[in-house]
Length: 243
Image (tube, rainbow, N blue to C red; front, side):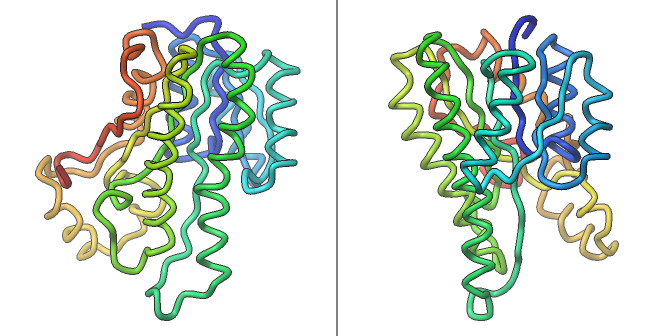
C-alpha cells in the first residue's frame, strides 16, 4: 500500500506514537509535516527519519497556531491529503481535587485541537473530493479510568467528533476514523514501577504492552486506498484489554 504523492500532517509528531506514525507514513511514500508544540530537537529527529518531511511548531489549542502549521504544510507540499490528530496531554487527578484549569486545558488541546485542525483540513479536502482524517483517541475514552476524568472526557469527545464529521464528509470522498490505543510502550510507561507495570499487563490478554508501531500500522491502513469504504469507525489497538 503506497501513499506516494500524498501529504500527511501529523500533530504531536515529535515522539512516541506520533513519531511512529510519521515514520510509517513516510515509509509508505508520503510527504510528512511533523507538528509539535515545544521540543524542536525531538521534532527534527522525527523529520530526519522521514524521506520528505518538515517540522511545524504550534499549539493546536490555538486556531492561529493551527493556521500557521497548515500554512507551513501548504508552502512545502501543498494542502494535506491526510490529517492525523495525535496531539494530546494529560493532567491527571481525582475529579474532586481537579482544578478547572486542568480540566479545561486537557479538553482544549485534545479535543478542541482536533476540531481546529479538522476544520482547516476540510476545505481543501472537499475541493479535491478526497481525504483521510484519523483521530487518535484512547481505550480510556471507551472504558473510562479513575483519576482521568478530563482525559477520558476529551478522548470520548473525540469519538463523537469522529462520527459526526464522518457523516458530514462521506459524500465528498473523505473518510474520518479513530484509532484507540491501549497501553503502549512510551516514555511514560517505561517509567512505571515494576508492580504497576505488572498490574497493567494483567489486564491485557495479549500479554504485552503495545508498541507505537502497532498504532502506526493501524493509522497507515486507514490513510490508504484499502480503507476507502470505512468511515466513522473506531479501531481499537489494545491487545484485547477492552472489547
